[in-house]
Amino acid sequence: MKKFLFLVMAALILGSTITGCKGKSQADKINDSIAQLMGKMEGADLKAQFQNIPDLDEQLDKDQYLKGMMSVIKMDTTKSSKSYILGLQQGLRVYQELAQLEVQGINVDRRLFLNEFKKMLDDKKPIDINMTEMQTKLYDLQTKSLNIKAQENLAAGKKYIDELMKKDNGYKKTNSGIIYKIVEQGSGESFNDASVVDIKLLLKDMNGNVYQNISKPRSLPLAGMKQDPIFANLYDIVKGMKPGAKVIAVIPGDQSSSEMRGLSPNLTFVVEITTVGLSKNEERPAPSQYPGGRNAQSAPQPAPQPAAPQPAPKQDKQQQNLQSNKQANNQQTGK
Image (cartoon, rainbow, N blue to C red):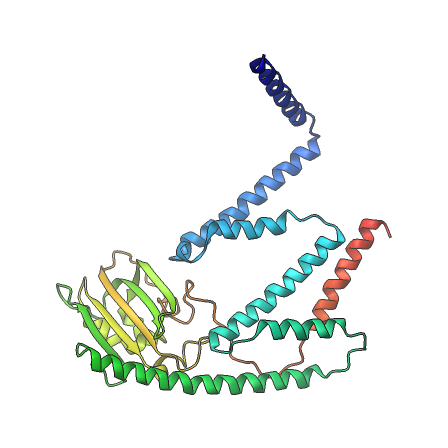
């Protein structure tokens, strides 16, 4: 009897599903096709990024990415949801600004930030502040903080290199102040300017924070290394390497951070380079695409140094967003 009831229920469910599909209008079917095509295109775009940007799959959690996207896409169009989305948009923008400052070494207390934000929002008095003056003050404070951080990083880097050379006599120093250690000698002939070498690379600071990890070999044409902001100082080291060699190099802050835009000033970097061998890939990347270069795609997005003080347009953008939200609500209510 239970089996019979189960079959009846299954038939009813299946029948309702089929009826639902058959009952769709032509417009609904077209709209479904639009949804499927848009989903396929967005998915293909993200998939292309995984294919074109080396090691992105190691830096991005696909499940969490999808979770975050779905939490927004599934929202309805009510006033509360629209307001929440506007808050998310502003929050994401501010999050990026704060994250960029922290990469530079300016640690912002989020609790203090949110307290001042809420106080300003809840204040019933008309706005009576000069945004240009505030922007100038912010610029000056950021500059002072970065100058202090630069001196701290430079001193810490010098201490790190001195202690490393005392503990390990395998390190040698170049004329520019870079120290390096040959971990694996490799075999065969040394590379030359005509060589395009497949390498693996690990770029981190002296505290162990990883900025780039190329675990899959990437082609590096030696002839253009001198144009690259990071590898210019490592040119002589890499040129002397052989297939299968591994070198650890430490770049002092005054040799690297001026070109590592967006990172903490005068930060000392540790680079581990493994040469897999001569590349079979005939396509030679431009210097700006080198691993660790200024425009390296898998590196953290660079944060610009503080710009010249300009009137902040944030208030106008917020007003535009609120106005758009109001117009959408009016249309929905038929006003």
